[in-house]
Length: 346
Image (cartoon, rainbow, N blue to C red; front, side):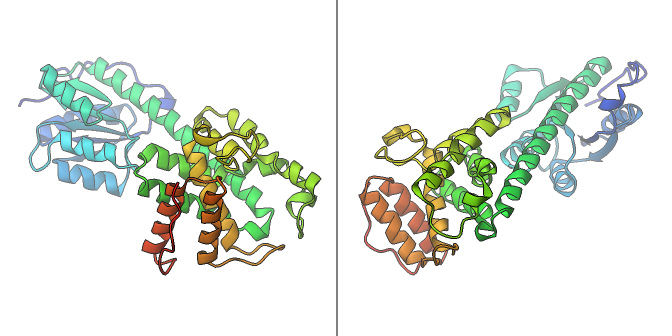
C-alpha cells in the first residue's frame, strides 16, 4: 500500500484550543503512513504515539490509555479488526474511540468493522479536512464521556460522604457493590447490568442525605414513626438520581431495593415481577451485609445464620429462591460458607 495521503500540505486552520492536547495512538505497519499522520496531528496540538502492529497497539493502550486510536486494518500479527474487538470488549478501554483506517472499500469490510465495535472509518488515501473533522468530532465525544465519568465520581463521593456520617455502616457500600456485581456475573448478566449494580451498590442509600441524624444515628431500635421517616430515603434518593440522566439505570435500584415480592415492601408495595431484577439482587446482598455486620442495636450474625434468614424470607414470599440459592452457592465457592444447607425453591 502506498502512503495514505498525497495532500499533506492541504491543512485546515488550527483547531480551537478546547480540541487540542489530546493523546492519539496511530497504528500502521508502514512508517510512511504513521509519519504523515503523526506530523499532521502534532501540528494540530495533539500528542501522538505510534505502533507498528496489533500487539504493540494493545500494549501501548494498556500502558497509557489514549483519547483516540487510528487503527490500520491490514497488519501483521494481529489485524485491526481483532485489536478493535479486544479494546471494545474490555470495560477498561471500550469507551476509547477507534477509527479503522483502510483502503478496503467493500461493504462487507465495513460491516465487519461495525461488528467489532469501530466508531468510524477513514478511507485511504484520505481527504485531510475530512480526517481532521472526524478526529475533532470523536475527541469531542470522548470529552463528554470523560465529563460523565467525572460526574459519576462526584455522585459516588457524595454517597461515601453520606456513609461516613454513620460509622456503624462503614464499608457497607463497597461491600454491596462487590457482592452485587459478583452475583450479577454469576447470574450471567450483561456487563452493562453489572456496571449498574456496581454503581447501585454505592448509591442505593444516597437518599439518607435527607434523613435527620437523630434517626440515622440512633443507637437503639427506631420507633414506628421514625421508621416511617427512614423509609423515605428510597424516594429521596430516587428524586436525587432523577436530576442526572446518566443515573437513569440506577434509579430502580435506589427506589426499589426494599420491595418484597409479596407486595409488603416499600415505598411502592410492588409485587412479583414488578420488582426490578437489579433491585431484587441489591435487596438480597443488602440484607446479607446488614445481618453479618454489627450495628449499635444488634451483634453480627454468622454467615450461616444470615443465609438461614434469607431462606426464611424466601418462605415468606419476599425473595426469589433461585436468586438466594445462587448467592449462597457463590458464598460457598468463595469459602465464606462451609457448605450449602437445605435449599428453598422459588
